[in-house]
Image: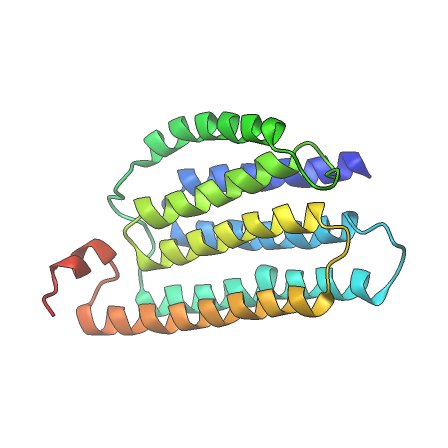
Amino acid sequence: MTNLVDTVLILIILTNLMLLGSSRLRTCIFVVAMQGILLGALALLTENSGLTIHLILLPTVIICLKGIIFPFLLFRTLRDLNVQHEVEPFVGYGTSLVLSPLVLVVCIWLGSQLSLPVEAISSLVVPAAFFSIACGLFLIISRKKALTQVLGYLVLENGIYVFGVSIATKQPVLVELGILLDVFVAIFVMGIAIYHINREFDHTDVDRLNKLKG
């Protein structure tokens, strides 16, 4: 079981690297969808209490929301925007890929230094979680397209979820579903906002919005 968890966590780290190195928005959305499916698998693998409603419900909801519904909403927004690439980001893709291994090493070191209240199911839990959070923040800060920043928000939330689902021994289902609902509402609102920004200004480059005078 531990080997499977390690495999899922390594794949989550690889999806983050793919996001940092890709300029195609459609590819980025597809990668985030893959990450959502991996989170569902992680929730399934970390549950060791036998076949319960919690074991069936939570991974199903995660995969449906993060692997299907969120990507569908983002793909529809991408179609309405008629934008395919992230152009001229604040930090280039080559630089992002060069910096990412250094950040990963720092996350591994932090994972080795952090004292957890309970024993994690894998030594890769904390590094994968911190690396996902760092990648999400980096996408939000370094990219110009509003849609890419929404993807960064999703990746950041995925990192928080990896940390929680892999360490907490007991998690109330209602709390978990409440968090997922908050993320759903956030993505829905962000999609609407991006659509209206594009309709009014004919672009979604957030750096150009700084030129607006109130």
